[in-house]
Image 1: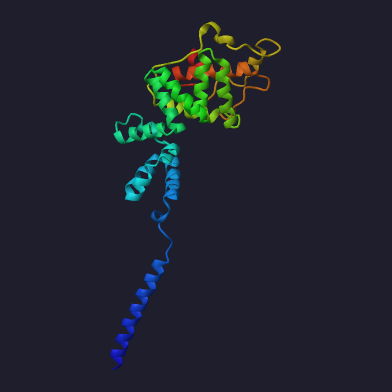
Image 2 (image 1 turned 30 degrees about the vertical axis):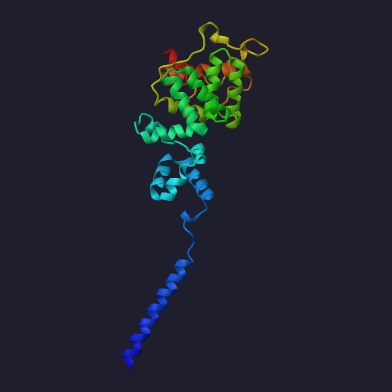
Length: 266
């Protein structure tokens, strides 16, 4: 008799345990798939903004993720931190993704497309269109490159306007922008090397110093290393000499891989 009661007690205890576990599971926090579609799209946009690779993995997770990942908002905010490694990738999926980003006004992919068009494919009009679209959206690297190209085409004032936008966005520190641009250019096949016309490259816009050209002596460095933290030209360097120097150094970087003007003259 005692054994029978014991077995019944154990069976009842097991049943109660299963019901308690089921209740706990039903009270568990909702999964990400249960989020409203708008919120799920916002989450996936954050993923896309940090890593293209992670977005691809998310798309493979569930059907709902795959459907949500095709929303235009995600393509607007996607970031391609591994773009250099994927640059010469023949994957249709990757280039289709790029085009969707461009079609939805993604400033980063517009910039990268513009760089390819202008410097590698030598399609200057197309490249300038993409770079301008990105620069108008305030993407710092596009403002920098677009401004320099304008400067070299005798549109100095318009070019300086975009260079100043870049400078302001970066807290008057251009060193990080230079580093990113140089790193990206390393992966390009640069066929279109821009330059400042020789006839007036020594004084493109005209020194604004009271004593003609004396401010050039105040430039702290002749060139910059890519990790140079000293981003100042000198207390008394005028705007004209500052931007003329910036453009000359960018053009030198395209030719030699270095922003240091002296490298191009060794």
